[in-house]
Image (cartoon, rainbow, N blue to C red):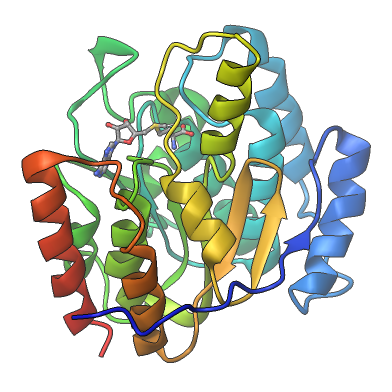
Length: 290
Ligand SMILES: C[S@@+](CC[C@H](N)C(=O)[O-])C[C@H]1O[C@@H](n2cnc3c(N)ncnc32)[C@H](O)[C@@H]1O
């Protein structure tokens, strides 16, 4: 399949960083307006829960999203009030717990599974003695039963978890090397409602790494561009909050294919056999979009 030629990137609504609790309330209102829910307010207990999470900042496990990002994540879940969310990239389960808590504050009690979270590993890279998702029980003991953790799985497992268009929101924070984020989006798209949103983490990681290295500062990990290129070139509505961004799915999912073909022209950051496998998986993912 050849590329259909350039696909124009869309304008981005930049809400800025959520740097404080005051900003949380102001930006929540602006985000609600942008999302067509003007007048919506944070749910009872939402800000108290965020305070409790911020209080943990000094003793947090590494690898999870930072407070500015989970303020945005909480606001988005709170405003859109999805009943089911899928997450790719669980690690300790910190972001999973944030999502589950925000859904619970919108819809109240009940034992229904609200968050399906997928990780390719069984144990955490930051501490191999800990199981993927171990932190969920520590952070939200009363809500742990509303989360299902799926290990040794990738985004293609979504088809076993939901009917088409069932998820109200998705969060992708897994392998950031191009074209993994693209593949994750394409695999989830059939199962997220048309006009629904997918949240991407680390949408400035590549540029950040390049700036640090050219300033002579060394970095421990790699800083791939996968999520950044995907977000920057996204041709539909999108909202940025510094490192984290939300992209809106078109109602006709097949409209993603020309965009994907275009982005696949960028050199893959995944190499060798893995690159071949991902290219094949990308083409396969098109079938479910038609
Ligand atoms: C940055 S961590 C996720 C952090 C988590 N979202 C949080 O904020 O608390 C990335 C996780 O993605 C997982 N991962 C990497 N590649 C993956 C893939 N292709 N599919 C699913 N999970 C993947 C890793 O095992 C790791 O646990």
